[in-house]
Image (cartoon, rainbow, N blue to C red):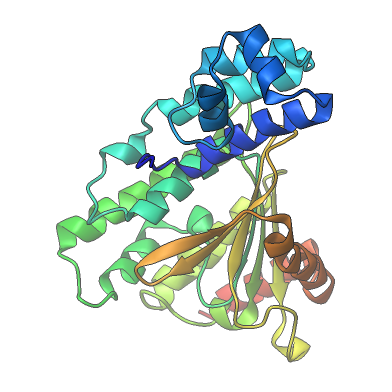
Length: 285
């Protein structure tokens, strides 16, 4: 029995390869004969039971006559899955394994839809706000550890300013979060002004659920949805836990989250109305 544990991106690549074959209607035996693979190797590739070589992705893409653009996207994803990212160098006490996988996914995503009611999404946090959150944890981390956690969070945010392919963000947050002075009034005011600045980026959408909304969809259940450029890379839902995280990859499992995010968009204030509310709260800090 294989003991190899693929990361989420490797599983996405594997599903793409399996989907390519299913769409052509070709049997595994037929593909193996053309590719020069054993059936065991093809099975391991399609189920991510061992590292997937980019060269094998390219070979299968050519066999299945996959369009060049799609073939290249999956090939590059396979390359990224094998190359350690900056997050791999961080020790476990700074970044948990589940978060490490999330950072790998986020690095290759084109859009993150995030729903938070109790804190500012990590991609939009200031250093001071992130430090206040880190040092409120129990057991309280050392200042050095908290600072390293903050720097990891800030490093994630570089994707928002990528000249070639900036990460798109659609964040829906609760009004109560705006009024909770994490780090004190001055830190919170700076955080709110930062939200306004980030909301001016063309690829960042920010909506606030007003307190007057009462009960609303997914109330009490924050989540992230990551989307990718690759055609066969379906959305992945990520749920935070206190000591880890959980991924939801099946279509049936993802459906409630995509439906509720769409419903939240309708309940929340518009982008301009949200900016007005954030500015108003900031002025009162």
